[in-house]
Length: 257
Image 1 (tube, rainbow, N blue to C red):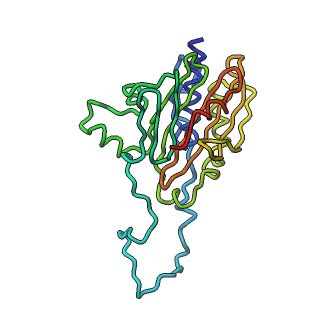
Image 2: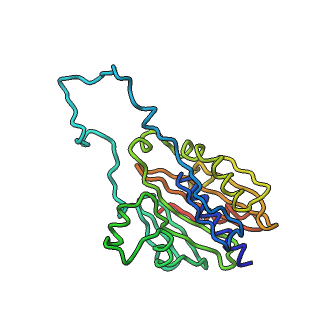
Image 3: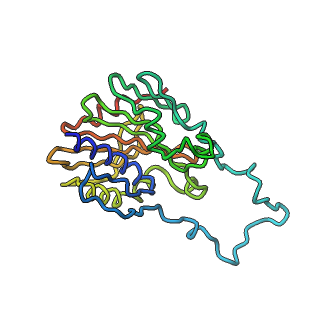
């Protein structure tokens, strides 16, 4: 059973990373005996190439020269990580930036120390943890599991580039990763797999979500990754369930602040 639970946790983390477009080989022997040792390269296409205007294109009024370093007239979101991350106290997780909370009840939160390891933040580094956070593009902010470990929740955030902030919404963000998510989960040992982009109710609103069904170690496996965008940041809320389909019950634990 411990091996199955380890596989669930790995699958949840991988789906979160896959939707962020930066999956790496974090599969451990405890999750899959013959796990691939090479990196799994998954990335959102570089949109800079398709945005370059023709060489003879000139639509700038010479009387209103624009300083490339002046962001005063742009909609670029310069929010820092310190304003994006949530807080966990007792049995509640709250995120002011994305305006949602999670009532854990009897669920068990991953400790701060474990989250530091998950994010590869080094307490012995020359940089402080705060500096390492500001340098990051992806941060796991919360992990929680039900007492029997059959239900798991993870919340992570990705910082988008300027181009992707302007061009990607939640739907297109997930659609770009649909096939990659399926491929990665198949490699993790999830069989009879079905992956599609639909919608799920999250914190009182409907959001695009990657919806996964399959079997893992002979048991029914359900997973959902809800995507919420705010400014330059994407929130990925991953829910995994083994056995009965209680995905909606788990999502109901989230609420608007």
